[in-house]
Image (tube, rainbow, N blue to C red; front, top):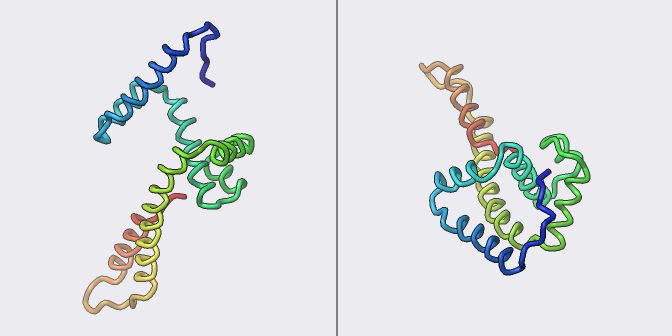
Length: 149
């Protein structure tokens, strides 16, 4: 868990530091710059911890059960319920960003479903072609469009 100094810091200094962080994040227009900034700012443990919390929030917004979230992301139930409380009480920023991701995931899920239906409905015999390699290509397409959670 991250540790914070117990020494007093003036409210205006604290506000300036927080606005500086937000400003730095806001200036990350490119994904590569944002990735470099996060790599420089956080340790691997912190990145994993924050990523799991975001994943929990996303799965909660998808109405996935706590047991499935725990099994898939390897997080404890208190972590899941803490994130759920954040979303309910003060998660407007969380919710806004994750809802755009939900829309993108829904589009990916529709693409995956159509690829799956195409694979199931196509005949096994494709004429003089190799049907085994054709079927393999179809299933690779299905795997590429699959959404992890």
